[in-house]
Length: 262
Image 1 (cartoon, one colour):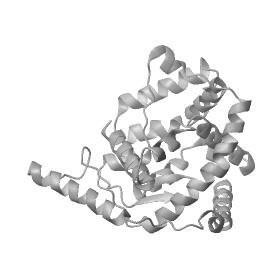
Image 2 (cartoon, helix red, strand yellow; image 1 turned 90 degrees about the vertical axis):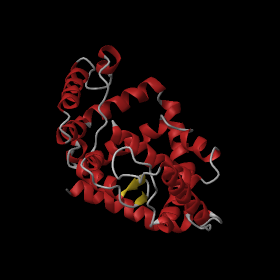
Image 3 (cartoon, one colour; image 1 turned 180 degrees about the horizontal axis):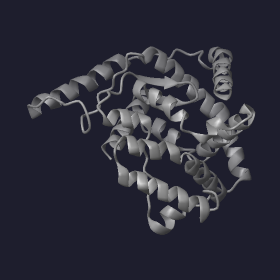
């Protein structure tokens, strides 16, 4: 798809141009290896006390698999600079123009458009009730919710969104997470979730909007609107942790594991 190719080309170009500027400081911090090893030792100790080995799959203790840590730490610093120097100032300006109810409605709109991703993955996981809920939510929100700008299915009928994606579907069938990886601009992921993200892209109606400039504008609006509703969360994580890189990695992996259980 031409639109997606142009989008990725822009991302790569931005990384090449901005990476030397943003990542000028040493990203390796003393004690990071020791901390990782300590985490593994504690996990091993808990396993020994219980007397039972951890089983791979749903419900297991999340043990970070981070062989790409050197790359990840560089991109972590890069994304950190992008957030504080670019994203946060722009998001604050966006907030000043659009009040929160408007931004919530915009988020509802994009969430409604992404229904095919959740619906198909519910079917792939053989969760037909969840698929039915997603179909009902789409019908209600697209009509009574004025094109999805209002989540009447949730607010009036208590029909909760079924948060399913291809990464979770692969995990549902026993595919391991693979290495943890941080992507420029996109943030934390794993090999499994990266494959899932690409697969879900074929289900997203936004990727079929033409010309590609319009699709890119919609993607950017969704990206900035989401960021505007979550300003402060990343700052809280950094302030409450001794090692922000480890805190972000563990928070992401635990979040994905908890979603896999649902």
